[in-house]
Length: 141
Ligand SMILES: [Zn+2]
Image 1 (cartoon, rainbow, N blue to C red):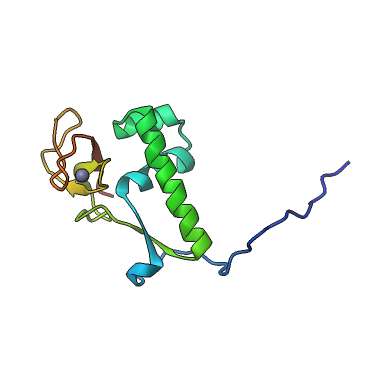
Image 2: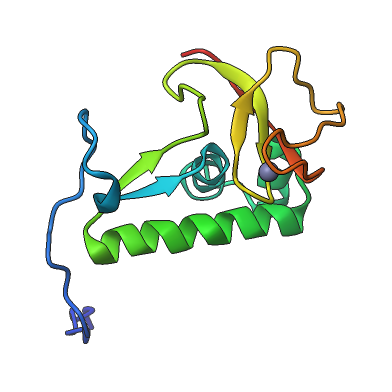
């Protein structure tokens, strides 16, 4: 017996049917800001398909912390889809198109470049002074 495609109930169909990358940025109120860490969490977990522990190890954070970053990313991406908003990946003054090395803050979401950054260094957030910092690195393409 073949599988039949069944109707699924959709309570609130989307207003717009297309989502795609943009070169020019939309107005601030029409976009959702995803931190570099949130973008990376989505990439590791759902694009490369690693499990949460391996993803957490790659980002140098604990599994519960990774889980929080991922949950925040899910919430933002869902909101962007529901409200038809653009997604901007923004890490403070980091140019995400180039390679970079730096840190991010779990407390206030600030992300910043630091050429001497390393996984084992203890640093505080320059914005809120939190010690809950993660290490960010992206190899140049
Ligand atoms: Zn901070």
